[in-house]
Amino acid sequence: MTRRVASIVAVALLIGQPAPALAYLKFGVPIRGQQVTVKWAQTPVRYFVANSGVPGVSAVDFQDAVARAFASWQAVPTASITYQLAGITSAAPGSDDGSSVLGFRSRPDLDRVLASTSFLIDSSTGALIESDIFFNSAFPWSTAAAGEPGRFDLESIALHEIGHFSGLGHSALGETELIATGGRRVLSAEAVMFPIAFTSGTIAARTLKADDIAGISDLYPDGDFTSAAGSVSGHVTRDGRPLFGAHIVAFNPATGALVGSFSLNAQGQFSIGGLSPGPQVVRVEPLDDAELDSFFDSSQPVDTDFRVAFVDRAVVVPKGGDSGEIAVQVVRK
Amino acid sequence: MRQRLILLLGAIAAVLGWSNPGWAQPPEPSSRLELGVGVRWIGRESLGDKTATETTGSGGALSLFSTQSELGSAAGVDGRVGIRLTRSLIAEAEASYVKPQLRIAVSADAEGAAPVTATETIQQFTIGGSLVWRLPGRRWSPRFAPFATIGGGYLRQLHEQGTLVETGRFYQFGGGVNALLMSTHRLHTKGLGLRADVRALIRTEGVSFESGSKASPSAGASVFVRF
Image (cartoon, rainbow over all chains, first blue to last red; front, side):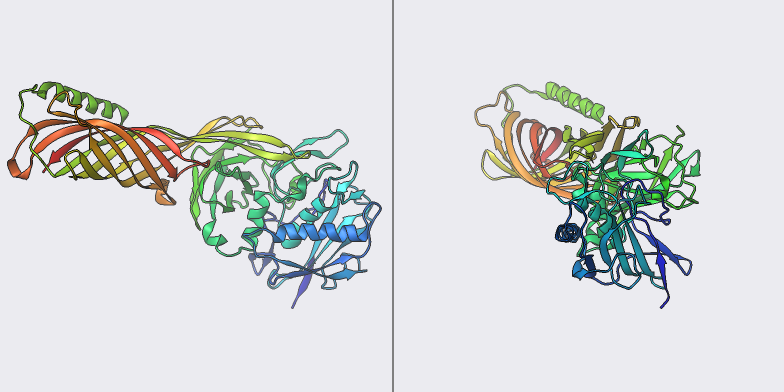
């Protein structure tokens, strides 16, 4: 068995490291010319939690917050993934020893990285072997039920990182504004997997959203999810040419659910899976609310020069099937 | 289609005016079976409003855009067969087919996208039954017979391209008038006439973006033959 480490970034506050192509909704690795989805081959996924805390968060507080975050993902009724606490460890996250560890590490050099997830992948199958999450102890943390001003909510950040730990990439369902000191401030997000964290003191990201649930269910479908849910697919063009990296969002007017994806290849094709059957409103927007390398390899030609637009037909998602090809034409700004 | 319906209703009115024979006509022959075919119009239904929101850091909601949805009014065809149970009570089985348009008006986009109306055409089939009560003592002519009706049935809505079927039930009540154009005993028929009715249509389930039943008006005009 050949093994290699793929250091895939999973970050909250303003990141600057590249993620692999096809990062959303799932991570992928090329194996023998094919893009293979990175996921755990067996569940429950066993993990260890470090036995150390940081100022404001005891080791027990940390273990409890991590357990709640794992429980949130495991509670998704349409996903089959389960997790199991294997024990408390003194080992630090980040060592390639075959054990998945979550813990604190002091990385003051990563002054915009709240937390990060790394993987050990079986390069012959794409199966995850190990995944470690470190929380940067250079930042102030909290596990208070209502949050604490000036401190980042550990459960919220753990929820995001466990999404990566499970194989999910970033979502672009969020709005940001540039701030004078550099970087972005999040105005809103409708996915825990949005790449930038809310400012300190908030606990708004402790709850999984429709986009997260669709992603984890697509990756680890449970029961009749595959036959009960459907997808929307199509392609995006501008001036008759395919557009790469457009953010496409399906809105369900019955439930209010927002689920997004991207046009991911040279033909501008996209697919949004895990949708409830019924008519959807489809919106297309440029990827301008986070750094592009939060989503794609920097070599990818992401095009953001077009106006936000809606598809002028109600796109019907069938049960267990696809909407059929939707042609979306956008115009330059 | 609406213009066609209005023209047909106008034609019915003209025929009634021309054929009204006054009080001296003989009573219609007793008949047990009635077949009818005609056109039916169903009014619009609001399917509700929804706002696409994202969660803010304080736990509030930031509006991304808003939608207003409706199933537009539409005209189609219907047919029925009725069996007289008593002198004034008729049991009817009926079916209809209309093609309303689902319209989702999208507006107030936070990033300035132009408003659009996303549409699709629904094929709606209904099959059901009703009881028709010929109102006693209300005839102003032997040829005109007002009636009240109540019924219900099964609804099947097929989305565009046949990719998704939604089903539900409907209930209806209303009234109308039968106008007997001619009485005859030829070819086993006992009469030929026109019917016009209006109904309140209450739908449960089927295409809907909010909980609860949907109500809309319905009007029909048809030709009937009695046997």
